[in-house]
Image 1 (cartoon, rainbow, N blue to C red):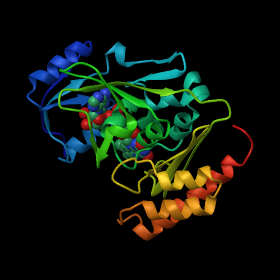
Image 2 (cartoon, rainbow, N blue to C red):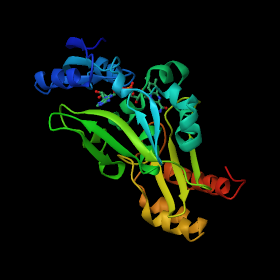
Image 3 (cartoon, rainbow, N blue to C red):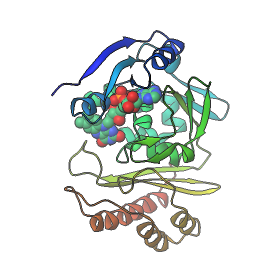
Length: 277
Ligand SMILES: Cc1cc2nc3c(=O)[nH]c(=O)nc-3n(C[C@H](O)[C@H](O)[C@H](O)COP(=O)(O)OP(=O)(O)OC[C@H]3O[C@@H](n4cnc5c(N)ncnc54)[C@H](O)[C@@H]3O)c2cc1C
């Protein structure tokens, strides 16, 4: 089945894209890599009258270092995240995550902004963004907004982006000296969405843990983080398993996912006790 959509427009710059969305009466859909949007439209899980193609907007591209923050344009493709030297140095979690996302063809088109705006609970980049304490930058009819990742993800495929707004970039603090950033997950086959996964970041201020595929949206897990801060790995595993509410589906039962998340935290903890990164 093919997508039912009224029209397509290629925006030349951000202002043009925002105007196109404003004129579409809430029926415009931002088209980035198209890897999730087009599939969802083909399956009638998403509808829209106008695809607003943002791929030519130069202001949404590029990775830059601004003092102690890294800014990653929304249109940065997964494949670029995988090879960008600034990301490898200052946010290695994102680079590692790309190894776990889909296949090369999808990574060549998919964008970090699209993945975060889409807010799939099984996706890696939304979890990474929260684990790294990123800020999500959006622009829209009421002007630009900067949203902490902790306030951005609201539910299953739900974010605080409003109709007519475009995610322009994310920014995040660069890794401190001695910071650890770890991602672990289990998928049935390489490139599949994870049955369960987690990101663990260890900073001077403490641990940050965010899970993948075991809830409706990325969330920090304060009890497990506090146990990790105290060096109590077993306690952290118990706290993490108690905190999550994983789904049961054709891929795995809730009980299996709950067991798995503890195993993944033990693996992450073993990494944290290994050689410095
Ligand atoms: C077979 C397959 C396997 C996959 N496996 C994985 C996986 O293992 N892990 C994973 O994380 N992902 C996976 N993906 C998803 C992939 O990473 C997508 O590329 C990504 O989720 C969406 O990025 P996109 O640029 O393609 O966004 P699009 O598909 O273009 O858009 C997705 C949604 O976000 C909105 N949007 C996009 N960009 C913006 C923006 N800048 N501002 C506001 N709204 C915006 C769109 O309107 C749409 O609602 C898979 C996809 C496929 C097809």
